[in-house]
Image (cartoon, rainbow, N blue to C red):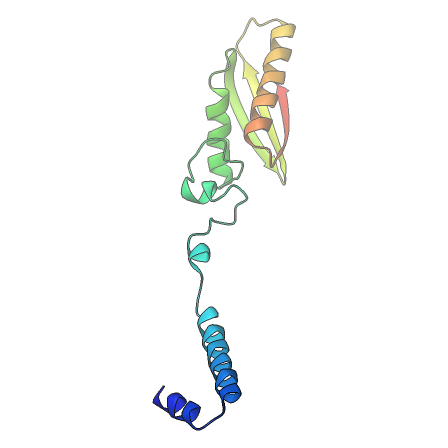
Length: 137
């Protein structure tokens, strides 16, 4: 800094202004590229849901999968409240999720169809990454 002041004393007014502008630009360029900004440090995870999946990995209806075993447990959990289902079997074939339901005995065909439709709707809503197929045994 002492050299800059001494340099400016021996030069004309315009040369001093140009030198000051150059020093200012150099200072701005070097400090402007120093590391991440505060916004980048506080950015959300790149999951499409503003970091919700990364912050709360066990949140129900998070629209992302962890593993097949967790997805099977999740399918059983969301179908548990549906009355008339005795047994649930789940299988995967790539992006297809196949659910085989064993209904309780004595249900009418209309009730069996309603259970199948309701189960398919619930599972498809909660796991949209899969193509869901539900069958009644």
